Length: 415
Image 1: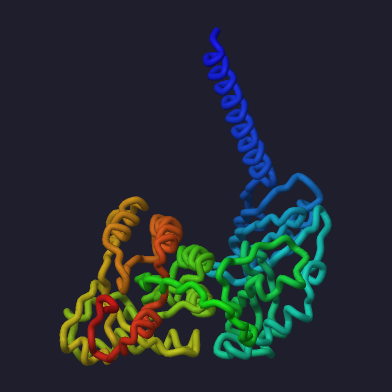
Image 2: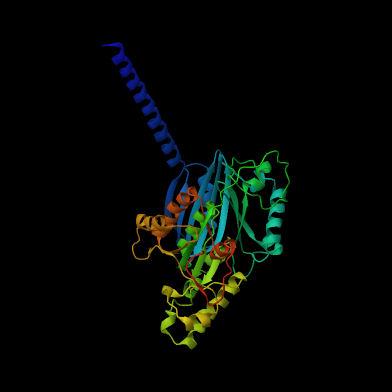
């Protein structure tokens, strides 16, 4: 065998060994992650319970907690689990008639149950929450916060604090604090989101010796969701939170009645709520005197839940005429891209429609009713953000474009 052939053989052998090591490493990692816990579902005291099973001491605490849940108030329990080196954070979401009624979290260091004070300067956390409440009094008051049952979920870049039981209406609120605000006092392993602009601190001035590189402004678009709320709305909210994206949700009265807690959480997370009528009526086919009866009751219902007036209207089916527009007397928001996700519930089809047509200023129409839409949003956001798009609410889209939304006028896109 020639020297050249031997070299080729050696190179091939080394390449095969490296490839095998990579595959083995990936297999070991997947096996380790998949073996962290087993996903179990069973019925306890009439409740359908989905919970993690670790096959160690953690299970004893979980079992005790599940057995103590009041089954007259809860009929379904689901969980979220997050791992941070030796720490395990579990958040249980408790449902009654498809509505979230409470949360409960447990935090372990290795196999030992600990409280949030073990991993975070609690005084600093309370100070940051005080600043949040000061700037968001329409969401929750200081007194309500103090009375609330608090549950914690440590996510990749931020801490979510779920507040329940702070008033007689059973409202639920959410406070989100980025790790940039806690990094000097957080013992858990954490990641910092790139490009985060601290919202709780006074701006500081820095002497610049050379001009900074100009930033390319993002291309603004809006995601809108019709016909909710629904249990799938919560999944969409979680995905959008990861990208600090905000949407506009045009809700229907009969779903607001059924899923009022989800509407409250949508509003509390900073998304925009719009009017889509009380019962999804085709407004251009009913008596003009009946149009207010389709719009005003939903206005009142949402205000009672959020203490904020809806300012935007989307007629069901996009059906309107001049009479309808004048009676509604709100900006009418249609769309420039229709995903038709209700018709062909296929993720690839939805993604291709959006990516094949998207441009700055577009308003995209989805429906937060289908698992395929949830998955499409999960696929679209990283692609769009990689291409320098930013997803904002309809009102923010027009405001940042310098376009004032006028009552009665119809809008399909910004610009």
